[in-house]
Length: 113
Length: 111
Image (cartoon, rainbow over all chains, first blue to last red; front, side):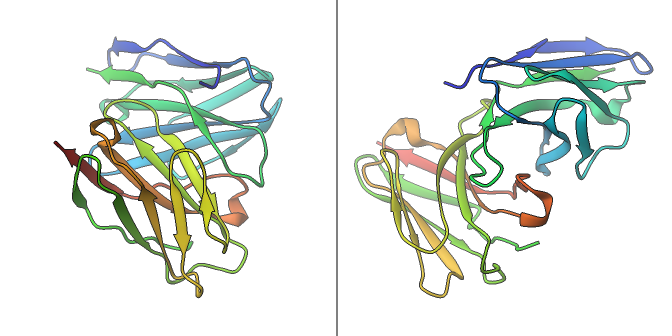
């Protein structure tokens, strides 16, 4: 299994509060991704990173920000959580851009009340 | 983006080969076909990918038609643990390594 750890694995919070999800890898892979998964929508890309301090938006980036100050950590922040951001969040890593082989973490289930 | 079309669900008997089809008629010449699967509540798992030649690894085989407009993922001896959602994805080259997941096929392996 790829060395990916997501934290927290489960979180319940209230609307308007800030939330940060952490993805930590031990593989020294260059590329990291945040996806969310919702019933009826499948997996959708939020943000991704192609190196330290290099990030870009995915298809559903509104309301989310990311940071990557170290190769091993990719943080996803919800500045002011809303109920529509209740979801399961998956982090993924990839070594080579060309191969496209992503390794996913176990997911973080976030509930915003 | 090249789109993929998969049947929403399929059943397979345990021990038999599972053949999962995928249509990608608008695929471009430099786009790869990837297959992932997701077992209930877990993160997606990479299975295999290919460009135009058939590919085989320890998990599965990928058969791509000569015109590349469709492909089939083959699990040679399906087990109950292969019950999962299987995603056929065509890599969107202009977005680098980002993969766009569709609805996939729910494969139910039955004893």
